[in-house]
Amino acid sequence: MSVTIIDVANKANVSKSTASRVLAGDVYGVSERARQKVLTAAEELGYVKNTLAMAMRTTRTNTILLIIPDITNSFWSDVVRGAQDYLDKLGYSLILANSDWQSSREEKYLDMVKSHRVDAVMINSPAVDYQKLYALKCPVVIMGDKREVSGFPIVGTDSAMAVSDAMDYLYEMGHRRISMVHPITNDCDDYSDSVRLKGYLNFLSSKGIQFDESLIHYAPLTVESGIQYAEIVAEMENRPSAVLCGNDLVAIGFIQEIARLGLKVPNDISVMGMDDNMSCGFISPKITTVRKYPKRIGEFAAQIATDLIEERPVPEKVLLPVTLVERESVRRL
Image (cartoon, rainbow, N blue to C red; front, top):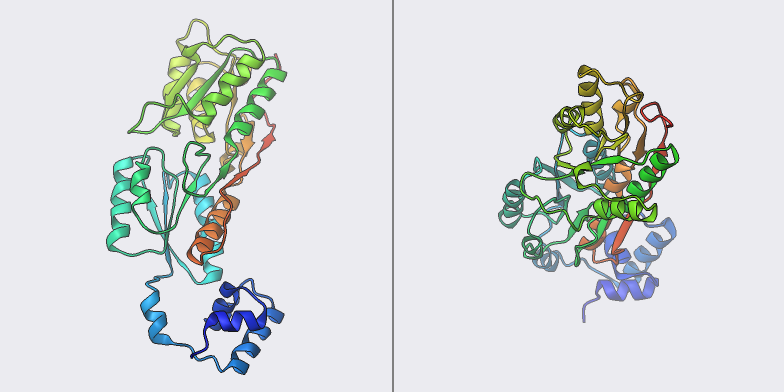
C-alpha cells in the first residue's frame, strides 16, 4: 500500500493541510520545526508524490477574483492593496473587476467565473442575487457589513458602530436635526432593512428625537451625489444643522457645492464623512469623519478566501471597529 499525505501528517504530528503545503513547497506560515518534521516523516516513510493523482484532484488556477463597486474611491483601492499584498505572499494572482454599483456588471463577472476558472471570489455586492453566488461552486467571501446574508463568510466594517459613533458625536456637539446620506445603487431602491438606517433610527429613538423622513437622502456614494444634495439642502426652509454623509466623497462634493451656493461649513451647516479618505485632510474645512480600515478588510478577505481553498476553518463574520477622527467640519452649537 502506498504512503499517503495523511500517513506523513500522522507521523509528523501535524495537520494534513500543513503536510500538504510543505510537500508542495508552500511553507508560508509554517514553522521551520514543522517543516523539518514533515520532511523527515516523508523520508522515513518513503513518501513519493503522485503527480498524476494531484493533477486529477486539483483544477486550481491560483487566481482569485475581486469585485469592487467603485475603483475611483480610494477606500476600495486600499481594499485591493491589502488583498493583493496578502495573496502575493502565497503565490496567488488577483483579477480585479469594477462593478460601478451595477448588479448587471456583477452578474457578467460572475458568469466569467464559470467559464474562466478562478479558485475563489471576493465581492462587495450592493444588489446581486445571492443565489447566483451559491451556484458558483467555489469559495465566496462577502466584503461589507451584510448581516442579512447567510452561507458565506463576511468581512467588513461594523456599520452599526460607525453610524452610532458618528451620531453620538454630532449629538454631543449639540445637533438634533441630523440628515443622513444613505448609499443606494443604480439597481435597488429598497434599503429599509439596512444596518446604517437601523443604526440611525435606533439612535434617534434612544434620544427621543422624532424621525423626519425628509432628512434621509438616498444616493450613490459619489462626489456628484454630494453636489446634488447640497443643492437640495440649500433650498430647504428647515435645513438640518448637520449632515452625516455616506462616505467622504459625498462630503467633499457637499462642502464644495454648499460653499458655491453661499453657505459655509461648519458655520451654517456641519458636515461629517465616513471612511477617512486621504482627501479629508486637504479640503477646506478639513473633514471630521469615521475612520475605517480598508486595507485590513482586503487582507482578512484574502486570508479567508485562501483558507477556504485549503479547506481550513474560517470565521463566519469579521467586523472591524472604527475610529472617530475630529477635524474642522463640525461645530458645537
